Amino acid sequence: MNKSRGKLILLSFLAALFLCSCGIPSYFYTTDSYYGINKTESYFYLNSRSDTDGDLNLVTDGPGMLVFYYIDNKESSVNLDSQFKTVFQGTNGIGITPGYISKGEPIISYTTDEKQFNVCAFTKDSGTVQKPKDFAYNLDYRQADGNIKYWYSLDFNSTDKTMEMILSPDNVIDSSVDEKIIILKRFDGKSFLISQQDIRNSKDEDYSMISKDNDFYYVHVFISLAFQEGNFSNKFWTDPFECGSYRVDLI
Image 1: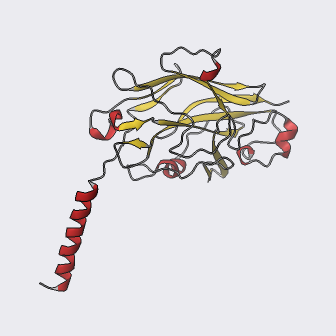
Image 2: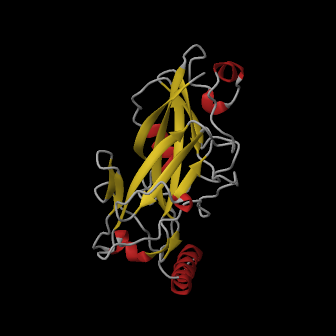
Image 3: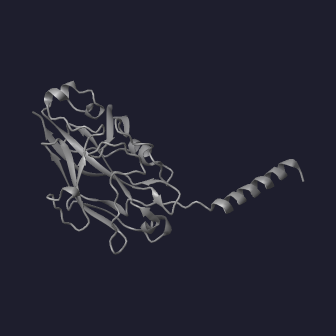
């Protein structure tokens, strides 16, 4: 037996030993046919697939919900293009985490149509650092059929200068219950700017896309759902989908 053949046999044996000891990795993966948002009726959903790859029973914690935004002067949002989705989710059909999501920096900055987009994650009301597996918002409710469905309300609080979200699994939105309100602050843990003078003086990255002469701007809000913990080996993010666009008038 020559040396090259001997090496091949040895490598094959080691690979087989590795698979036997570690097990063949399994992956969670689902398509946009099984998740999405209905903006007319204000709910988003995830439906379990019958095959093993997209079975929500594999998910032991969550899934997690990341809420993020960008700011500009247009009422209608742009579809987050393929460049953003490539970095955010990955292109290998399995999904990857986009790295650490830290207070004080956008998720990603990229240029399209000669315009730089700074897409930022909202921080919790405590302003703590968020990591992909340490979500501020954990969706642990399952319907009887194993699917997940949440109605939502999302508004701008002009007094506190924050976004406020309420989630409900039973289509009962009650803004009088404080503990049900999720306070969404900017990526650096601060409130949104409502003064024209503050806008003109701001060097913050999330305000870099707006005209300094306008007396209003829009906050475009998106959600992505992430499967991080369960009986699978990967970290999977759904494509982002839009909740709505919210006008902020300046003083």
